[in-house]
Length: 99
Image (cartoon, rainbow, N blue to C red):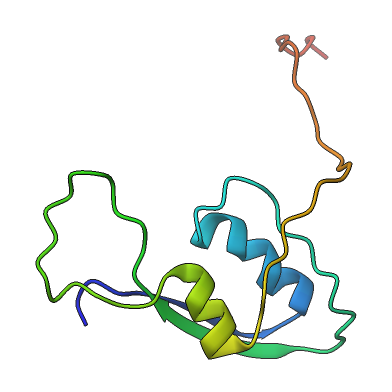
C-alpha cells in the first residue's frame, strides 16, 4: 500500500531497535529497552503513520497504527511509564579560544 511506512533493519541489538521507536513512531518521548534480550536481531514493520490533521487521504489509505504494528507484527508492547532520565542541557555557546 502506498501510504504505509516501512521500517526495519538487520543485525542490531534490541536496545538499538527500541531507540528508533521514538522517532519512527513519532512518540515525543524516549523508549527504553527493558526486555533483557541479548544478541542481534532483524526487524521490519509496516504501519500507517499519523498524518497531520486535515491531510486529505483517500479512503484506501488504511493500515495498522504504529502501536498495533509493534504488537501484531513484532510482538512488542510499549508500556508508558514515568521515571528519571539523563539529558544534556546546552545553556550557552562560546567561540573556541585561539591556540
